[in-house]
Amino acid sequence: MSVDPRAPELVVSDFVTMMNATEVCVLVHDAATKNILWANPAACAMLGFDLAEIRPLKAHDMSSSAQQYDRVIGRAWLQDAVEHGSSRIEWHYRSKSGRVIPTDAVATRIELAQGPAVMVQFRDIEREQRTERALRLTTTYVDALARHTSTMAFVLDEAGEIRFATDTALTRLGLDPAVELPEGPRLTRYAHLHRDNRRTDWAAVAADADPVTSVRLEIGRPDGSTSWLDGSLERLDEAGVSAYLMLVHDVSDRIRDEEKRGLELQRENYLARYNAMGDMAMAIAHELGQPLAAAGNYVAGIRSHLPAGEVLDHRVTFGLEAARKQIDRAATIVSTLRAFVGHLEQVEQVADLNDIVTECLYFVRLRAAENAVQVDLELSGDPVEIRCERVLTGQVIVNLCFNAIDEMAQCPPESRRIVLTTAVREDSGCFTVRDHGRGVPRDPFLDSFTSKAHGSGIGLALSYRIITRQHGSIWCRPADGGGSVFGFALPAPAPDK
Image 1 (tube, rainbow, N blue to C red):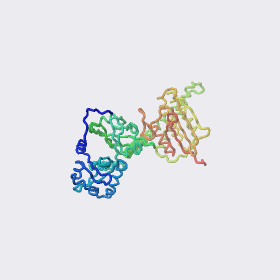
Image 2 (image 1 turned 45 degrees about the horizontal axis):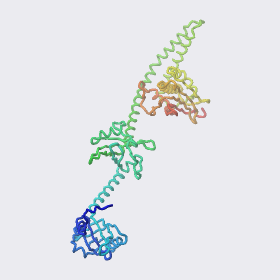
Image 3 (image 1 turned 180 degrees about the horizontal axis):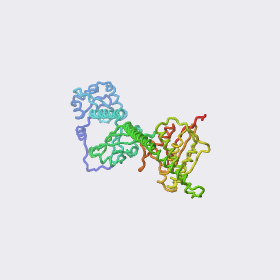
Image 4 (image 1 turned 180 degrees about the vertical axis):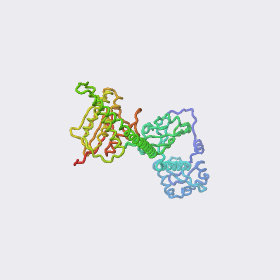
């Protein structure tokens, strides 16, 4: 670097002037004796001595009496600078008034005209230490709050990225508090935001924070359960920096209790309607008995008045015979329903489930044909004997098949197919009907009656009651590859039956 020859040169007095003007405290010690040779005005002002008073002082005269500031340690520190050129230490000086002053001190070996010396530069760090202690205390409080309170806190920026979160909040999101946050961690990457009982996005929630709004978080857990957090989102505008503070707490138990109470209310509504339905069924069964008997008599009367020996159109005889069978079937259903609604604790009748399915096929295929649905059978090659009420069990099969057909009617023609199966289990017989439809979002047997737009739901409600009162089980589950499987199982007869 070249020096402008026209620039004025600094003389020794200029350096003295600069040393006297600096706010950094300076003491100069002799390298050998460690006696004080000189002090600048800043050092004299801090220590409360003038230059004449400060020169004869020794280390113990102007240092804290604490053991770590002993004269021997001070001399060793200065000697380290003599030998190695520089040495740093936190040193507590003691002023003339007795005030102990913590300082950050740097000792540097310098070469003077009279020989080597040590220049010590130091500054008062008492205020810095108080600030540091306050910060440490605040950090301790925040850490304790994060570890021991149920409230979780997030600080988010305008884009919804997490800038800070308590340990409990990070743990709830599935993040490790000991690991640095990934780059650009948006809160919505780990949780769904909810407003008014439905999902929403960050922009909508942030826009409502004027300055504060309520918020709910939905967090999926590894075990498949859901964690719910409720709280508030507040906009913070400090020194031109926009941020959001989110304080939330766990309300998962409350949400589950609300869902449980809702389900219990649905159950109560179902039971009330079921009881009313039972009364109605008893009344209908009672009132239908006489009309059905009369209809059967009318059919028998027509048959008895047909001309003897004449060849009749087969459609007439077929129609009369079919009418008689349906009237007999209706009468059997009514009488059985009356017995079922009244009392059913033990079922002693034994039937082959394959035969019951076969008897129901006429009605199932009739309904399927109306909707262009193919019906396939995969019946067990062996008899599937069960203890049941035959007619009512057949009605359950019809109900489940009709539901499957109605579902397939909403699907493309090429996929309209249902499969009916029977199987023997260890202690029961099983029937299933599989469709290839849209599937069901939840178990329909948990709902109160129906989700159909134009149905009463009595079919599934009665099916559930019929099967369970016969000591069986009924279910619905998603099918592999799409669609649903409805089925039931009824107990097999005892070995001696």
